[in-house]
Length: 384
Ligand SMILES: Cc1cc2nc3c(=O)[nH]c(=O)nc-3n(C[C@H](O)[C@H](O)[C@H](O)COP(=O)(O)OP(=O)(O)OC[C@H]3O[C@@H](n4cnc5c(N)ncnc54)[C@H](O)[C@@H]3O)c2cc1C
Image 1: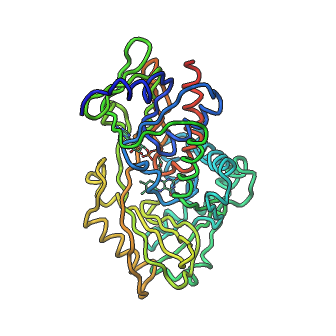
Image 2: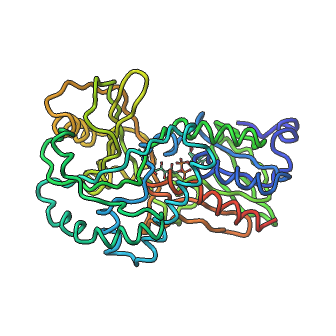
Image 3: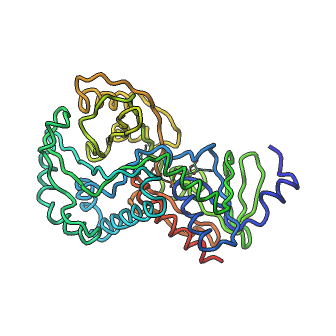
């Protein structure tokens, strides 16, 4: 590629106050909060994909804040304040997402979530059951709701799953339509006058004097007063030293099925596998994904794609556990890339005086994306 023409530069890339790299949940929310607070700022988003192309349009749409088994596991390695501080941020993030976009626009459904315990997981189940009152007390202080978690083994026969011993229900979990959520966020960003440039891959960002220089694929360079990386699982390509590791997740959706015996979000094998109903005019489908614990090293990649190991595990789970003995066909396969690290806490910080980052959303970015965006917007605003 050539350098930018005089016209291109003057018309599209001159006088940029804030350039955000990445139009996922975080990039869009940052831009929206910042523009609402400071309407005079010229904010652009540079996105390499024709759509946001990471995790935000490719996730499962669980509106979740942590299953009891996962939280118990987190407490074994992290202080209580950190674990429940993050739960509170996820909860508040979900409430704010729902209030900004509205439940109708998100197709938000309050079906609840279930954690599944198989034979051989009795010890984990007993630990969770013993701590039920403790978790419910803390959840009440966060959500104001009593009895968030409850054992609901009575549903086991009607759900029809094969080989399952226990179910713990989380009544405050919901599910939403990921596509609608992102469409609504893109719509708000455009309405506010935020310019989104698709098909632009950023190769390099550096601080020069009191501004930033962004080098685009092909060699052209543009300037912005401030740049924010909202690149989540792809951050290492730009700043290799940061603790944001890519984690690929493979997902399938079935063809419509006549009648599903269950509704809700399901967490299986400590949340490494997840599935839910997806309702639509043609009937209900099942979305099923995960399994990266079966090939952790191979799945620590920024490349989209599929592997036989994980596709076979997901297919087996679908046919043998979720709908045993029923005829079911797979309609879609895709993958998405999350950003994870040593801790589950997202990074929201300035890396240099004018280059910031908001990333490492882990597996609950739907809940965290809005708040992380809001925090990033405040951080950048303080620079003006
Ligand atoms: C399969 C899957 C299922 C999930 N399920 C759930 C769920 O049910 N509930 C939940 O809460 N969370 C879930 N998550 C996690 C959630 O989707 C993420 O945490 C969240 O979407 C992260 O948003 P983000 O904006 O930080 O990153 P992303 O959505 O990945 O956005 C980053 C953007 O940056 C762009 N980009 C990267 N590098 C460059 C560059 N150099 N130049 C230009 N553009 C660039 C990418 O194209 C991308 O669009 C899931 C994730 C996956 C992958």
